[in-house]
Length: 97
Image (cartoon, rainbow, N blue to C red):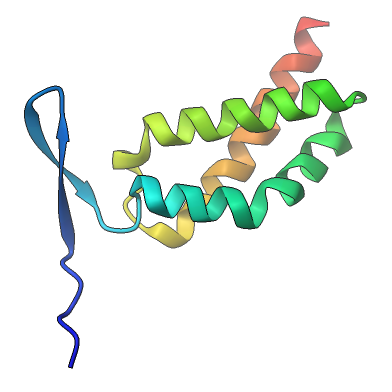
């Protein structure tokens, strides 16, 4: 019988140990990127008119969620955070035009 997955995973950052909630790891974000990049690109395309801006927005969304991954406590909410970040960044891009 396999061992149960721990609820908390330790990670090293800048020499200080911090605890990251299970499911918000870099591996989880990588899987989410591979599975949902195109759908997030489509979401951005609904709001923006050019492919380059859409790609920039989606990449920035992943960077921001990665930076704040320790605040995403439930892995199933990662995609929701990404979608909302894409919408917010798209709106910001439209305001800057």
